[in-house]
Length: 293
Image (cartoon, rainbow, N blue to C red; front, top):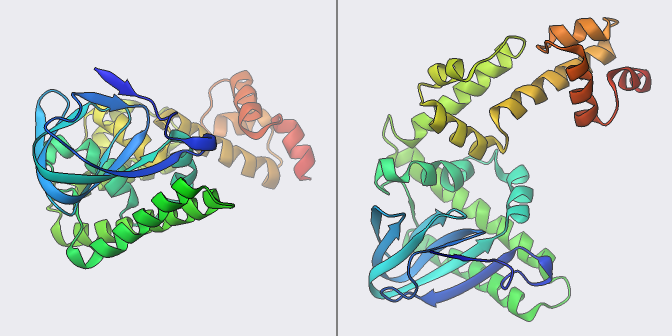
């Protein structure tokens, strides 16, 4: 299977590219990319094959995410024309910081692709005709800016990309409020929220993955994947971040010893706490306390 690199598309190191193309049956065989792709069906219809066993019918107005290194191809195409928005990992990470709290964004971008097989593609975004013009105009503007590469084109494209993300987030949030059934994607998001709440309240304790899985009523492997997609962190990184944040507050607002603070926030080893604090904050706990005074 071929893996397509984003390097030929991302000019000047700018990790966004937009193009529209007609898909034949198949134009390319099973392939993957080292970038994330958002597909928007502008014309026609066809069958989208994902992996070795899953296939979904796609129609005009359908929009969905194809994750990096996810194998796919199309068959049974009928005048199928698709806009592709290619996004590299650094651009994605930068926008994630801004957008992950916008209702609908994480559900569209991360949760739906993970549970696509389970929901049989029933929870993907379908753009109604009244919003299609807005979507297509934004994509054409991005495409034109990327082709012309006029002065300031990167700023213009990134602002249009942000507008595009906000539009589809609003559309997906509206769809989810009307259409998601109990027990489907919404319950998975709720499960992760419950796990995060559990961590926030029990970060001082020796938290085990099995405890978190029971809390969220998800299998451990599922939970790890979804948690990282939604937060951008592993659960260990998330727990460590909370502990270091609490330790920082205690160093500023209490006179407790560094050893006491170490154990109070959930670390079991003083030297490991000091190393982790230094790696996270950029200075030792004692230096941080002195500076905060």
